[in-house]
Image (cartoon, rainbow, N blue to C red; front, side, top):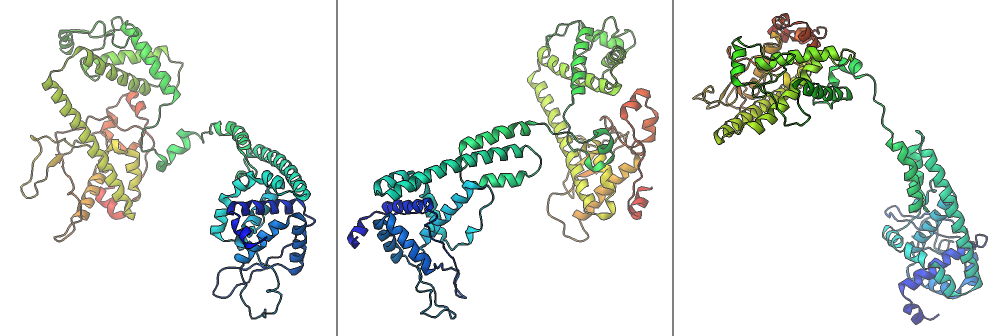
Length: 549
């Protein structure tokens, strides 16, 4: 074939004939060449040269001559244009066998690499041998991978177009081997999918599946279908949450937990029981037989008996903690616990909390339906909501600041347990931004917040909180004229008249509560607190002296 004919061949035709050559060589393994790859490199060069033995070259040329001579001419022409000349090595003189052997092009090496990987993946699912060590150009390999699909699709057409019995027989053998390898691949992947249901070898089997060359969408869908039942199995919950977890204060959650099934059943039963006592329908906006304001005033003065078992009424126009509603709640607690005494998990505290929440929700609905607020009242209500929101935000920020300050000092490490047990709800809030109570100091122009004292908390905890606040302020304003960056700390002053109306934190050690607070509790209220045994605070001696412990 002349040079003009070779130049007329397009790049796609050359690639097609090269793919045919590789398929024919795969169909006749007894006539294929045995390659020997030997890297040769200089001290300053990073590429490798690959050489073949002369015997392999001669046998290859004979086999190729029997199959298709024009393809060999094109192959030799392309090899002569892109031939890589080995470097001269001191141990190999110019007349040695290195110059006598043939050389591979980088593109032919990439094709051979893909062919070998395909053969090994077809018959076994083990990781392919270390073929990656062959000197293949990265750019050439990426380009060849992009054209691999198009070359495979044109395989049958090239075998019929080039002619020759050898090509046809090679194509038939190649198709049979592909079918056999595909069936073996499907069986092997199916067996791997069965093994994936076990608890061992997940990573190894997944790696073998991903390395397989003949995986298709059908097999992957089958594997996903077999893995779906094992993925949908629910995880076993570890251990009893009321025994081991609560003993370790570091495992306490700092956010509200989801309601369990027992709590949901209790709330549903309380809604139904209250509906029966009030003798009303199941419609949520039904509020029959509401006590009048005169009846409520007479009850507060002792002239009226208020709610009774025969005529149970809740005054939804007043808070749940009002005297009328307080008596109605006590009646409900007595009747409910008497009728559902066989439920051990429905304790007095659980019933009390659920009923309080339900009455508060119905009161919100009642005020929306029967009490139309004027624009002035809506503005006052909105201001009160913003006031409560700011107070809650300051309390949470104060807790986070104290936690960060304790973690920075090794001598206060034991105080972290106290803060985590109390949580943000256990911190004392301060008076919201009220112009009548807040004072602006002339030299600092910062508002002063008055602390709402918690009567349920022990005195040593209050002194510990004040100590942490004082240490934080000294850290922000060190001795001298410089201070750290950021806004000034909030000034919180003690007030003997302001007390907190928040409910005490339940489940705390006994020494966390004030002794006088515990002395005024009745049997039910003490049981609802779930007081735990006292825990000793182990701080550094200098801090223990400041706390008076």
